[in-house]
Image (cartoon, rainbow, N blue to C red):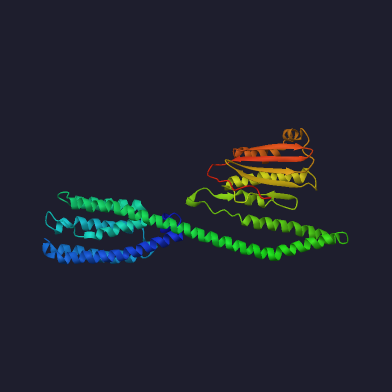
Length: 397
């Protein structure tokens, strides 16, 4: 990454494209202003006390304009040093005016050309750069005046507001371009995911479903084929869960904020032939660290079902996004947890429940509630969320 890209907040390509276009337009404006300065200088040559000093100053402005325009054409060369030199040339041209013109002059030697560095600063550093350059040029203009006239005040005032306005417009264009570029990339990624999902559905999933069906039909005569069919069914469910998770991809947080992930997509990967996962119709965006911890807690619940509820037990995971909170319930149809078993496990140093489930939710500021009986076991994991996280809708059937 070049220094130029680092100063642009990571070097978004769309923002750099906007900046390049602004500097190309600035090159045209600078050429027009140089021609105006040369023309006015020739026209008022007889008013100069030291014509040769004026000719040298205007020649320097012309040569510098050609050199700096060529340098600005490459984004990597738009360094702070070059922009500072550009502004220094403008200030020097202003300060040289009293050496060339008589007392009481109206127009400066550089004329309107001093706007060129100001607009360059605005294009490069936004409204702050435009304000700094505008105030610098305005202060130099006031410094060389014998008195403050209404015309001089008007010129300085336009410089003070012109730079920030141009800089603000450049920043707005860059933000719009970046947002449009991200939206286009996300739309293209979504379209590609949909295409891949169709290809997988029309090919791999249908083959796996066929193998599972044929295995079930021959279970009595060929146990090995039946086992193959069972494995094919598990892979089919896992692949469907992966496709659903890809459809729920959450774009990165804008503005360099904390990474965001979709809790629904994370929980969808836990679905299996014995685990049914019911999710909201939309995404449930949360900080990535919270999503990882909640998923780990749910996985610990399902691991307990696998170990203690028996080989035939099934589990259901339900995610709900409510105003101010997210809840995940994990229920199974096993025999339940005998009374006192969790207390004995904790006393014996086996902290699977208290650490993997209750501890994780407690660290996140939430809670884990347990209900158990002969009907089975249900964990309810509740996590408070910021109001900025919108509800994603009710669970799907």
